Image 1: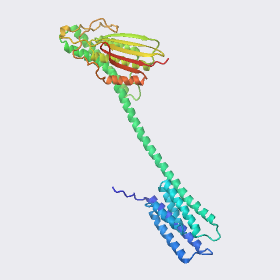
Image 2: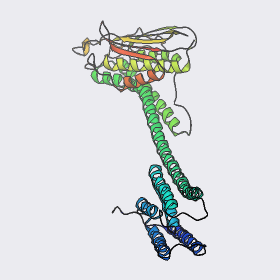
Image 3: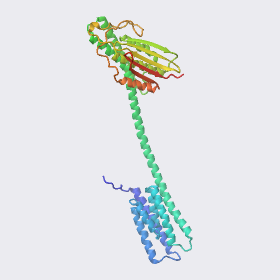
Image 4: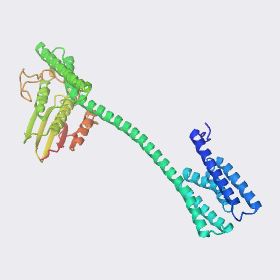
Length: 415
């Protein structure tokens, strides 16, 4: 592609022809008036004026390519030529339309000096010089003012178009950002909903693999827990997918009251969990959901990284003081040397309601499931930190002084 200007369209041709005819008509009118004047100018000066006016009108076809240069030449000629004034006005108008206002102001100032020179060089008999100069200033100012109006109007239209284009792009970006936030929220919900259930399946399946010679009653109980956990995980997944397919709706959200059930499920999975609740009043739904997710993520991590360790869950708070959620687990139990040295099973009797069942574990934890202390947090803790930040709370987690792991969060509870 070359850098040449685009070819003028039909409208541009119509404007150019109209301005050319207007400048020519102005020159013809002034020439006829000069011939009918009582004291016409000398013949040589009149012929030179006619030639200058004709050349000036012909030069207007270059106004789109060289508007400033053409205007400067015609302004200089207008200092002595009367018939080139029409072409000079068209050139001033063109500069005002197509060039910045600063350039237009400079050219307009030169045209005023040329008007003053014309009054000095060719005074009109019977007409005061100041009136002749004022007439020239008014006509030239009208041409420049009209051109500036069109210039600013075009800039306004371009600005509005650019603003509309930017608004469309920003709306597209906002829609993409909203979709990204929605996907992140859905991923967080699926992680929270399914991570807990799948970790139960992993623990029991691994225990069955590690203890193939376990008593048939313990194997049946572990298989029942696996079946129930798998069924519940499928139910949770159906709820999430159902909400995604619906035109509107919210993902299924738990409350703080569901923490007891969460702890009971962990107890049936063989964990030793001690729950302590010290709450005064009804916890707001948003705070309760966040507290539930904190406990859920902490229990899931304890089950994966510290199997066999005792876990202590404490939820306390009151209006105005906030809600404190603290989950601590001891250091993971050392792996047994063989199956006979593993701790006894811990699957409670059906219908048990205690958060920490007295019955020993049904199957021992799988050796080698211990994480390294001080390891970097996974995506679950990252999502949990985002949840707590959205609730204007604080989250702390790390190795405990006496060994193990500690996760603590504070959430605001308005009075």
